[in-house]
Amino acid sequence: MILYVWFVIAGAFAGVSAGLFGVGGGMIIVPALVWIFTAYDFSPDVITHLAIGTSLATIIVTSISSLTAHNKRGGVRWEVWRKMALGLVIGSLVGAGIADMIDGKVLQAIIGVGALLVALKMLFLSNKEQLGKPLPPAGVQFGAGTGIGMASSIFGIGGGSLTVPFLNWAGLPMKQSVGTSAACGLPIAVAGAIGFAWFGKDVVNLPEGTIGFVHITGFLCISVASFAMAKVGAKLAHVLPALMLKRAFGVLLLFAGSQLLLSGIGVL
Image (tube, rainbow, N blue to C red; front, top):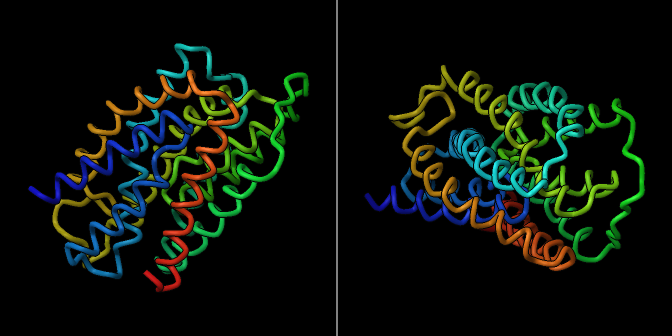
């Protein structure tokens, strides 16, 4: 029962983060699941991949909740989403296959470095909104979707840490960047979770109650909690000033990135 409580706590925090920052919650869920699975003596060989696959599965539910809340407030630019969606799916499937060949600790360290770089950009570089800037060509949006989907699937995130800065650079206001990012998390999560379930189906040292690299109980507990709390985060996102939202997003990534990097290199 204590294991389930930890799943619920992780899901609640991830849900608020998903709605507030436009991330799928993976930046919270992956480190949390790595810690939980380690504490419960799961095989070290599968911990990171199991955390990533389970995270992607939960992001399916979180993204639906978050994008629905943002869409009601006009925060999702669907014409941008449509140009990125196919690339997101292709990239996510390819990313799942790549992740299957990479050591878990290496995955943690790489995504930690990436999160830290994005955090520094959000905190210290100018991100002035360019409301009159034309959107980049459809090919650029598709290419960005492919790259974002691949990286997101490898690391079990909804892509917000990459999608939000890209959309902000492309000329979308911060609140629309967050809302559209939440919508982009859905194709990433669906394709990525299917990929991790498939590539993990023949792994022999997985714990009971899994489908490939997806822990079913963890998925259910985290999904219920994150679904409810994502709506709370989305409401806050439309109340807080854009600058405050960027800084809070940067602080979140700074914390998550440091944790993943230190764990990946064996310090934690």
